[in-house]
Image 1 (cartoon, helix red, strand yellow):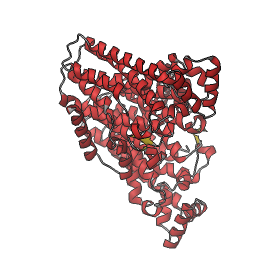
Image 2 (cartoon, chains in turn purple, brown):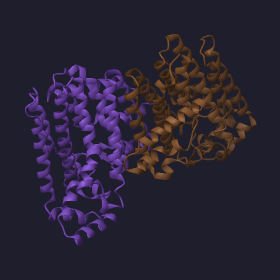
Image 3 (spheres, chains in turn cyan, red):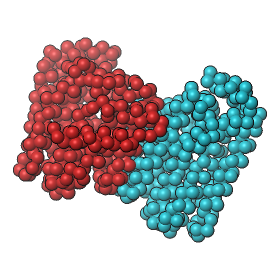
Image 4 (cartoon, chains in turn purple, green):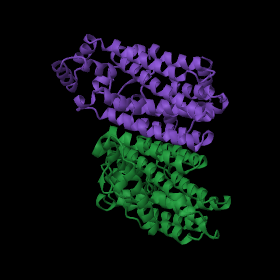
Length: 313
Length: 313
């Protein structure tokens, strides 16, 4: 995709011209960005801007800011999940230690803020800040599910957590892109609806990979959701479609650190297929939200939504 | 000080009206703010704004944003130093665990960003972001001094580290206040000079307390600089005024985790008195920078500088 190349070029340019001291801090901060990534938030910003008639040049620096901030949140997530791999390489805290990893994440946030100050508006900033607040809330809701598995592994809580943890930043991305492109209220609303469904589909697919895929394929540690008893869509589906006895057994096993029972239950209940079907529904809903607004790049936004279902990492 | 009360009222109002979910995340984020604090950055913003003719009401929300971001950096510093006490209470990671502490710090940064978006300008934001980058660099320079004590415990490196770690945010505070107050370039420059000297004096006083005071008096863990071989002014002065043999012995002892030798050396060389004299010099330089600009509250800015020398916590 030509736009992906544009974004990657802009990111490369930024990394090359923004080195500093001490070098190890910058190596740690740029480690995951250099390892690649889907650049999903960047693409959403760029496509949302173009959808409403904005120019690529106006929005490119902000796509870099989004990537910086997104990477900071990945560094933090990996620390919290004690994961060792991401994007096919060692996680930042694993490679550089916790102290450097924390500072690297802060550095990326500060760099992102500085860029929004240079190329953005205070309105954009409010969206970035508000999304940041929601991301922290969502992650905290997820982290604090430990030892309270029964109360939190349910669908209502899941949607609430995902809305904050994942959807907020995806929503902010379309908002930022469309604001830079000077969208009308109606256009903004359509893209917000697209983002809301897109984000949930994205998270469900992520959850599926966590329980079905391998580190070789995804490039990152898997089964984290089970090991830490986090919100996970197939797991919740499985727990909701089995007997109370089974549910209790499975939760007890998870609390004791044994994930085999949960994997069996997910298999027996066909939860992965059910989850995949839900993800497809959300992708359809996302594409539906785009209709009738005459977005010139509607096909690209549709493609991006479809890619969520196909992605293997 | 009436202005301190204004700031504390504004902070209280913010904390009361900005609770969220999960409650423990917000408790952790507000824990140190509620425990008190010098509100030094807030006071600098407010006084710098008033100095150039700005109004208190225009600047108050931004003083809260500064306090939120400053608190985030304290949470992180305490995690890195593994300190147990701050402002007379348990540190955030000690009380709530590392995961919640990390998210609480991120939440405070996101809240601070959101406020700058609401009440500030993109120009302010650039200063906040740039200061954030420098703070991370300074902290990283300091953290990475471990095991390389001989190379880094020297005065040149000290000033470089402190400029980033401490002065950057103090400088940003005067800049933000004076920008909101619509300062001239000359006024901005005078306040920047004030901030540069003020910041170094502040850090030297901090370093002195680390090696001379007690947790009962300062409300926070002490001797951290020695335990972790961080930049510390009296320690550097002591190392520079003793024989090479003594220096080597002291550094070796520190590397092995023994701080008694360093404390003896600091005592023998009168390093604390020398450090205090330097701090006084910097305070004088800070006050000198204010002269001749007709700042109506020059006496308050002078008082604030003097308070750096007298502070016991």
